[in-house]
Length: 310
Image 1: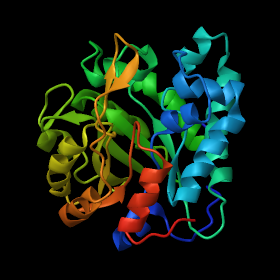
Image 2 (image 1 turned 120 degrees about the horizontal axis):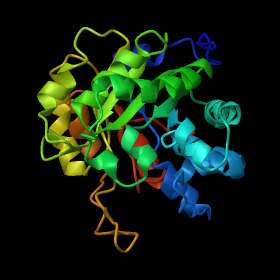
Image 3 (image 1 turned 60 degrees about the vertical axis):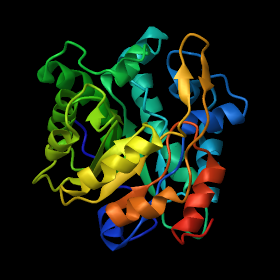
Image 4 (image 1 turned 90 degrees about the vertical axis):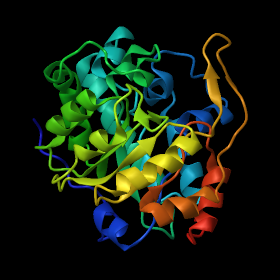
């Protein structure tokens, strides 16, 4: 395993130190911003395809969020896996370069003057690699050890690229969370753990109290919470996550839902920037948005939290 590269930070504070002092603003959905820029994301690799085919579009999307006020930029590596790249004929060496490039793109975009920023390297769940919606169900039929073996190579690759934090995100069940926490424990990089939740449970139907409880006593975890869920479910989850004593991370979807048959988003947005005040009162420190939440929404969050646009 390669040692983690020292992050090229523009601030002396770590993300953990910043969270101890107040609210830090995340970005929004990368895929919707890329689509707004005219990108086609119909490929199984989703936004990760653009790391190879149009990296300038990735950097432009990050820049849009940085200009809206986002302090943490999440890389385009959510669906980037060695297995997924291999299916497109991309070998392991080139795949590792593309994953490292996702960190570099976010770092360059974060260089917008006037704000300290951090780069979070996204590590999505096993189901994202399958590209069949499995990440919203979990329980893949794999053991914790098998999930460890899957996640370790790219976690090591992303950690070596020098991000400020690893985002273990959209995790659907406790087994996968346990595997991810085992994988990252010797990488020397802070992490946050965020589940995708519905109705007060993980997507696999486990209690959030038990799910969040996995981080107890793990100093490497700088925040725990939820993402890629309905805003109402996020509201309910924040207080539960805060009971861990950790800062809470919360970045829900817009409230629209994906119509798999029609391959389109349906419903109406229920994401409202005013929700952030309730999140903060309940213990949230790392706040933002996920799918279908764009730069204008992040700018509104920046206004509500007293963080000016860049």
